[in-house]
Structures are given as C-alpha cells and as structure tokens.
Image (cartoon, rainbow, N blue to C red):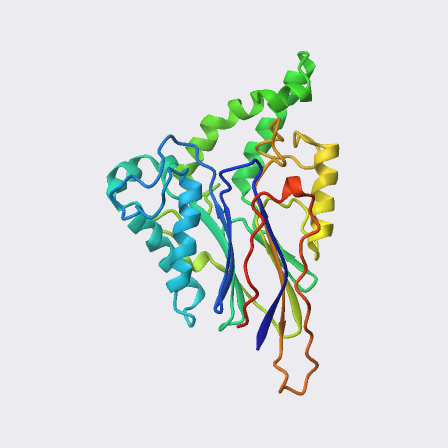
Length: 317
C-alpha cells in the first residue's frame, strides 16, 4: 500500500503567526489546527525545555509546534485512541511548568485539534473540528457551541447595522466579536466535557480519546485533509480556494452564507488560517490491481496568499 501526495497548501489569515500546521512523514500525514489564543500568556515559558524555539509564540502556535514534534516520534503501529493520548501527553509535558495555573485558567492552555492519516492502519483519525474528504464522502466535525456563539455574534452585528453601523466598520473594529469574547473564554470550561455544548480538543489535560473519529480508507482512494479554514471543502485545492474566495466576496463578515464567530479583519487574507493536503492511496505495482500515480502539483495560489505555503517533500508509506 502506498501514498502519493498530490497537492498541499498552508496559509495564515495574516502575514505572521499561523497556528495551522501540516506534517508529512513516512508514517503519518496530519493537519494540525492550533486553537486561537484567548489568553495573555506566550510560550514557551522557559521551564518546559522549549529553548529551541527562538521567539515567543501564542498558545495555538506553540501547540502546533509541540504536536508536530510528537508526530515525529509516534509509533507507526499505534491505534487511534492511543495516538490521541500520546499527542495530548506531549502538550501536558510542554505545559508542565504552568500546570497548576493552567488547571484553573483553561483559556491559557496549549490547545489544538488534529486530523491525520495513519499509513500503517490505513485510517483517517479526527479529533476536533478539522475535516476530510474520503473519496466523495465529506466528514466534518463542527462544534455545536461554535454554531450557538456564531448566531449570537451575528445577532449583535445585525443590531449594529440597524443602529447605523456598516460591514466596513466591522472589518476595522468588531463589535460582535467583542460581545462574544467573554463566551469564547468561558467555553474553554466545556473542553472535553461530556455535557451539553462539550467538545473535544487536545489540551494537555484529561480527554475522551475514544471520541476520536476513525475512517477506514480503501485502496485506490483520494483523500483530502483540511482545517476548518475552508468553509466549503472540495476535492481539489483550486476549487476549495475558489469557494472560499466567493464567500469572502459575498459575505466577508460571516453574517449570512457563512455565519461564524469572526469575520474578515482589515488587512487579513481570510477569517481563519487554512491548511489543505490531498493524496491518493494505492496498491503497489506488484499488485494485480491498477496503480494510480499522480504528479505532485504546485498550488495555483496568488503570491499574496502563499506566505506560509508548506514546502514538504513527497513521502511514501
């Protein structure tokens, strides 16, 4: 069984501080989405052995870096639930110097979600709200609480429009976002809770690893893994980018067609970081079934959008 990377892309919503990550090795292909920081801490704090990182990072970006390092040492034959525990323990270790503080301040924790393909198990594993296409089947993992908070933001902004505000104003200062920010900070208390509005996230504390979604991938199948920066996921990068661009033109403040917890900020390229990787799973040449190989494509993205395009080599599993 082999894997051929067809195309890959990663882009920050602004020029720096991308909290998405893309990892490709002989054993795993992973999209990591670091949770946007709602706290004030920067990382590392100097006590977690993080001196290899030269500049302070947000919690989301540092979580991305920690998980990428952990994926390098994760056993190829590990199962899905054990993999989530392994990755979560990496975050726990990275935050060990602040553990007591983080216990009482969940908004400051190192947090990320992940979706990955295991070459040995021939499965896609999803923990959190990343998404995938396996063949023609879309698997999205949106959070109920995000939908609720998005509606509150949209309600508030619609009222602002009635009072004379404009969507152009919202791009410079975001009254709806300010309205929901206390809720966004409060919702961290519901992370990994088995209760209404609870949701799954890797955060270095107790998780429900059995909540991981597992999708077997048959041979001769195309797979797309992506972060939630793509509201409409298509089976090519160009189509996904086109759908995103259309939404940004029609609904830049994410108030109608694409209701969300944040809109397009002036000077940003999108409302969220985004990552996309497409690959094919196939039989080796010695098998009697037909082998499909694809040349890796370079993303046809304007230079202004390619500030953090990944430059990974193709690997085989």
